[in-house]
Length: 219
Length: 202
Image 1 (cartoon, chains in turn orange, green):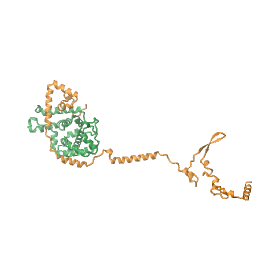
Image 2 (tube, rainbow over the protein chains, first blue to last red):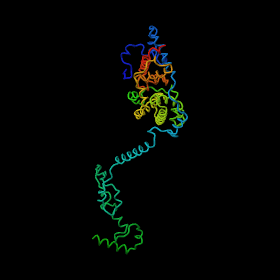
Image 3 (cartoon, chains in turn cyan, red):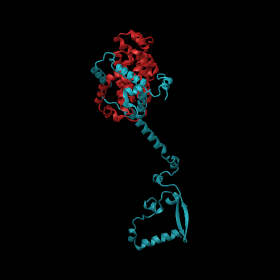
């Protein structure tokens, strides 16, 4: 048990090892532990001087408690009103439940979460890759540029052939063939292929002339 | 008085780690109601403890009006802190801690404003012999004898005798163990008997 300057010196404690709880025994025996009660009671039973001390302590405590209170008591009702006015009508919240603390904390948490999400997102594709694509084909920008593996069967053997996007889309990379271009009527001199019913309306002379023209062209 | 202000540090208002005493504390329900938003519950606490706190504070500051001001200040601090009160001590001892802290702070702030006669009364060493005093002076002599006690013994004795606190509450306020409070109480009474002499023996 540590002692401070206000406590009794060690010599006093050592002189009365059984009686250092005498005043507490006299004033509040119920607040002593059974062991403490037994220790003091045993000393009182065998020591007449201790019993005299017990009576003197009792008397002094009675005198102390009989002292009239000091000072002139204030107007208690006025003090109540004064306190009520000083503290206000509301009940204060603990500091961790006040809006002045909660609002900045929530804003900080939100900002931190946004920064975390932005930091964790993958970087976008380089803009330079888009610039290298042919102009005039805006739909091709969404097509994959990576090589694609196509399995071909040649004489029963599987062979992987890497095809680039341009192979898959056509030589010009737009996926159209010549016939499609002819369908659009963009090449002069070629007959339209979408509706071939006009062939049935040709007479024999016309067919002969066409065959001769083709033979001359191929020959 | 100055020895009190100088010898006793401000008491720690944080939880002392002792087990909860809510089951035996009659003020616990009021504290709970206040924390739940029942504002008038605090007014009941004020009504119940303002007299005791005023008397406790008066023993430090000595003047009635000053004691009233410090009592009001202590209750305002209690009002702000009651929401965080965790019930490890009784509400009364928690309030009394605030009262003592406010009184000691007030003494430090007003040390030079204390009237000379009060300071002399508190610090006097050569008190007259009991035989020279009339019966009417007996009470004053008793009070002067209390003032001569060492600060810790004086605190324990006054809390126990004048404020009717349990030894557990005294220990909480004196920041010592309950056994130390009991021992200090015994030696305070013993020293008081020595100061008062044989006239006060039964």
